[in-house]
Amino acid sequence: MAELTRMETDDVAMGPPTGLRGVAADFASDQRAFKNVSWGKAMMWIFLLSDTFIFGCFLLAYMTARMSTPVPWPNPSEVFALNIGGREIPLILIAIMTFILISSSGTMAMAVNFGYRRERGKTAALMLLTAALGATFVGMQAFEWTKLITEGVRPWENPWGAAQFGSSFFMITGFHGTHVTIGVIFLLITARKVWRGDFDTGRRGFFTSRKGNYEIVEIMGLYWHFVDLVWVFIFAFFYLW
Image (cartoon, rainbow, N blue to C red; front, side):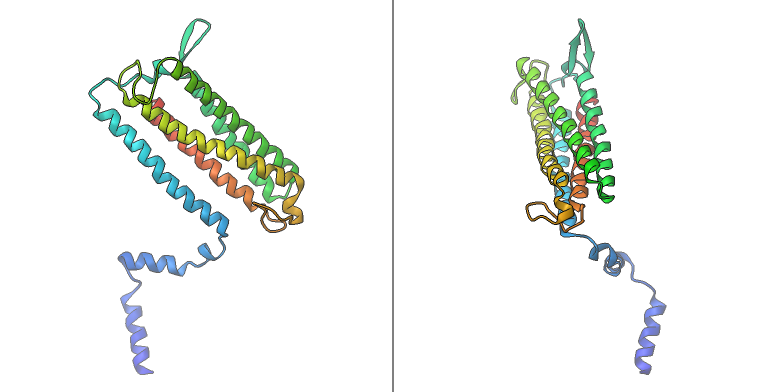
């Protein structure tokens, strides 16, 4: 007993562990942060983390190609300008697309809020509105692609300068547009289940959580906010730089 008491006294005198051991001890001691997290939410965070690495690699590759090419890089204000009323207005389409997508993040946040309150009518309506805004964004992106392809932009060449511009543009915006499209599809599926009351009755099926639990709406919100955040970086690095 005296030896145990002496050991405990030594531990107290040494204080909490430092360095990497201290970090590990902090994570191991805070069990509440892990025990109350559902599998669905944890898996979505892991997916978003892996997706962050992919988008980060794409943007780094784009910046490397842009800074290393000896051929002048196209001016985004000229490439993405629209002729409206006989005047070339730079980045007008991109600005509208960005406004629409950021607005959809707000409607998604309200949908999650009403989902917590179990107001399924408002939740479903806001999710449908979010999906409509996302579909509008994808439609405008398709118009942008069509315009540039018509003007001669290809993954291997473009009439304004560096050939890497086309490959970077189609790769980055196409990958992001695919994410938005997938998000729209899942928003429609989830909104339909909310509208039918599947989460109130515990009806069996895909993406149906426990009875009275609207957690899937929050998980969709995490995905949608991530897609919006990625677009902010694409907008800053690709269109404004």
